Amino acid sequence: MSEISRKQKYLLDKFGRRMYPPDFFIHRFFELLEEKPDEEPLDPKWRDIWNRYKRHLLEKFSSEIIAEIEEKIQSIEVVDEEIWEIKVNEDAKITFLLGAGASAPSGIPTVDKLLPELWKRAKKIGREDLDKLADWCNDRGITNIEDLLTAAYISNFAAKNPSITALLDYFIFSGGQEFLEEEFTISRHRKIRSSEIDVSSISFLQDTLQTLFGLLTSTMISASPNSTHRAIVDFIKDHKNTSIITTNYDGCMDEALLKEKIILKGTISGENENNPDAVQLIKMHGSINWAYCDSCQDVREFDLLKLKEIYEDDILSYPVLGICKKCGGLRRPLLVPPLSFKFLMFPNLIDIWNSARQAIDEADYLIIVGYSFSEADTYITKIISRSMSIKNRQKMIIVNTNPNLVPTLRERFSAHIDGFDKKRVLKICKSCDETLPEILGSILGKKAPKKTQKSARKKSGG
Ligand SMILES: [Zn+2]
Image (cartoon, rainbow, N blue to C red; front, side, top):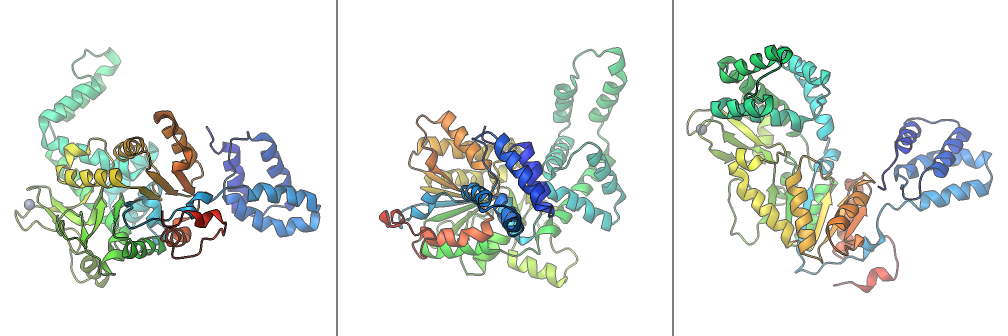
């Protein structure tokens, strides 16, 4: 596997954080070059580190040594050259897939940082029950918000369906088997707890969920689009045959489109489906401005820009979560953790997932921005693998700062697709807000390619 070793990660972290004496840097860097296998790539972050050290090294080391390192650093491939050759005609279908990395420059914590951020906010509002939950999670190393949401959803679902709770108990705790002496007390305790569901624990769960959603929404609602979102909007103005899929709950992409008066379709409201000018924005995991009623299952989409305004101006006591107009029950934001069985729990979203699959299947180019192909999100990974194997001229452009991602994907596709051409997966290993405007401009043939190679112009219009 062509992955970054622990040693390289350690050194990146060390030299990335502070300046050390130049000879120490040289010593450790050469040691790494000698030890690492050829297939292990150098992380693009070495470029920045090198640029910081270079000046100090010039005074102390011979130009041969400097040149040797310089060559290594220059060989770190950050952007695949082939990307500058891509030019699309108007028939080409482009599908963007955005993940947490696309929203990170807008100040939204990525999945791994979201839960710690929520606990910090919970502390501020002084909720003892949440602090307790935070301690419990921290003690067990539970740091992923998706895990927490998944557990809360399953519990909520099971609490309303006692027969499912009993079955869960049977499957997970072997409820039907005889227990060993020492296991008996614990198992019996579990059996009692699940067969007689405590009403107060359900309301605690409901209350916890509601508060968590409030906190989650508060981390996202104030965020504004960054240059990634704006670059996509600019692209769409010139290239109508485009769909956007996002796994983000935040409203950054929506806001960037709406502010340019672009009409959206593919949302939970089902509006504008037949409007030929509307652009498909598929929010696979829900959205902070979508709500559903826990009691009557009614689903609603609220005006995102208005919602933001109400929140910023602080003019309503309950601007984000609300009361269902149909039944008076409590509305919750429609946010979905990447569960593999989400179909079962969120039937309202089936149409949305189907249209995502279709947008991926139809794409000539999949431009995947800040999406990490997480293990939990098997659905998206599966439909992408399927479309890449069926449609053999489909290409992917991966914009992601993780240098391991593209090598891993290439290996995965090679294992599943006969004669897979690795150059169907192209990489841009840089922050998306820095690179996407230029790349998308180049794809449209609007800006001069950065690398002015002759080959870059050969295929224009194709
Ligand atoms: Zn209702």
